[in-house]
Length: 593
Image 1 (cartoon, rainbow, N blue to C red):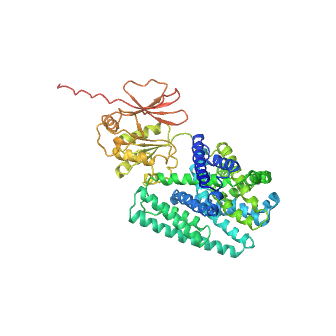
Image 2 (spheres, rainbow, N blue to C red):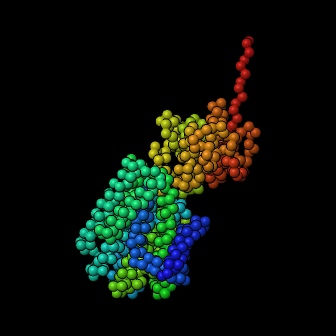
Image 3 (cartoon, helix red, strand yellow):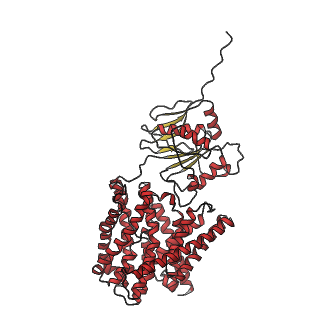
């Protein structure tokens, strides 16, 4: 290729990846639904986007390192404190049953469906055991299942990717050396060796990041550079020692960094998060461009049958076997059986191994990549279209009723929480001072665990169950900073109480974000009016608001909470209003009698 063709290919790949993700975000659909068709169409219309033409044989190495960065980022969002009790057991059983049953089932039916050898069928089977957080996460954001189900599926998708990548490498080497792709103690020993190398690599990565983040105390920019460098160095080193062990090292490193105490992880990592999303887009576009229309035609109908087999038989069987006596409802078990899309690791594994096996003359190896491509597109499309109605039918969707988190323990804030609870909302509160926490308990309100806000600053973590955050502490700078750091880690918006107009805070006067109650009812005004005797009132919106009352919140008929801001909408007759009442008039002192 000429230099101009290479530049055109790179630019086209980046453009397709970026615009597909932007459009998917606007349409509120998984980006994969647009990335794969975009790459496929571009690959069919032009050769300049084909990664083997742009990069040659080095493309597989770049894919491996890119997936390692993705899995490291996914590992950062896994809080081990949430994987306890029955959840841990369910995830473990889903991993074991999912890998074994999917591998054996696909390997058994693929020879008959695609006319391929047992070795090629085994390769397809091990490729399709993986799922992945890059696909599961966006689907769950759209479906909004209960927090328990979301936790289980995210953990399963994140952990199964590196395990599936290692198993794919083992099966590939077994097939290449004409050994059986199934069973034997030799293969188990090879798997143990790979896991050991990955764990050692993960330990090295943790040590390097502890040095850079804890000892050197690098800030956001240098800390991001250090993370990216460490993940690539450790993953590449492990892959040099043994193929695909870098995926394990990357996942272990991210998981350890997210859970070890004392590590100064930068709270906001916008560049790293942006880089990961761009990598995902580039990989999907590049890999899908290698699939040709001619290669899809002979496997299209059999692939549809395989998708139906995976969706209707294999995954429900895996969920049924894994969740027996696990304390889940029938609806929860059913939804787990209806969520197993394939993602980036399946695509990258097929891309890395299929060409080599085809060059070795293995019967049916040329069909591995197009079959994987169709299964990825088919499962993502099917689950994207059906997961939400299935979840509603099974009764596992989070209710639309708001669950606000009030941050602050002053008396006026605690009483506000009681007023919201009286309006029918499930209110959660958090405060740092122990006296304020005791005041919250005495009011009978639910108190969030002490580390909740620290968890919220993790860019991959979520405040589970919380739909809105109201920052109402007496420290305006804290409210302003927290509004920036927590935003994006809750399902809904984050608001802060307004600072005094004449305040000279370090941060508060210069930080954007939604401010509660408009420009008049700022923090010190609210606190002073409450101190003078003003109290909260809850009344139907159909009744006129007294002239001496201020409207603070509107509780919709379906339980959604809308705070009053400068841009608030009005209330309907069947809504509830939370008002701040007037300050009682001072009683005149009786004169001398």
